[in-house]
Image (cartoon, rainbow, N blue to C red; front, side, top):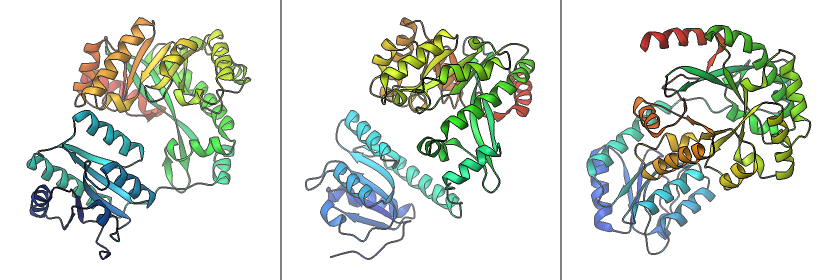
Length: 398
């Protein structure tokens, strides 16, 4: 028997422990939620579920476990906001959270039983606030190959720069160049909406050339603002990094502006290597021979990190923000950050932490011996015209 469709603002509770499910239901109703509670995973999946839902899910159940339930909801393309609860050990609960997030599920909290009811209510209130604030929000823009091609041809792209500071001296030592699209209809568009399409449609090399050219043109102004030569980091696409002509192409673009290669760092993600290791190593070695620095970006998120450090001439290791952002409240993330820093130091590499969002995280990284910090707490990505304002404001704050 199917249950009638319920509003997406309702709260679903799936827990085979009826006593516990009733307790959570009562607390949720006190917080103003309409609650649908079920003890059987099989019956729950027979419901006429909405396309968007908030679900409190127990991981351990007799018919289907929580992972199987998540998998089935993903198949149905349900936009899921998830609260995980379980009596299993914390590492398993943590791993289940990461799995759900890998499915692009919004996991707002993980609770070990017994759940602290005050925290449970606080999470429900937070979810409701987010739902209210997101009503009426515009849908994400979708672009065609022709849109992107026109954008490149009309030079609608621009560079935003995010500061990087030395954690020992608190002084700026570099910036990361981040591409943005000034779209005539959608305004400022972030790279997550167009980079993968540029790669898929064979336009990424054109975009890379444009990005490097814009950075080269901005280089003199950046050095003037800070009164010294600073390091500029530029992201290189997975599609570009296996092009054997890339080293000469980049060297030519930058030499036109008399830019010393030692002041340029090219950031390459681990995933870029998986397609063609031989070409990858060929390109990286030639870039290194030309004097450019090489950074392995998003370190720890791939499957061959140590092998890459052994084989490729990286001079910098960049800890992924997913670890940095969680390190203060996630023991496993803290361990990974500590190991990354130790590993980089043993290999004589510079270590950069991205995603620093608060002073406590910055202080922790400093105490661990991290070299360079980057994140919104230090400075958000900004157009070059705003960097002088940021510099002066920072001088006032110090």
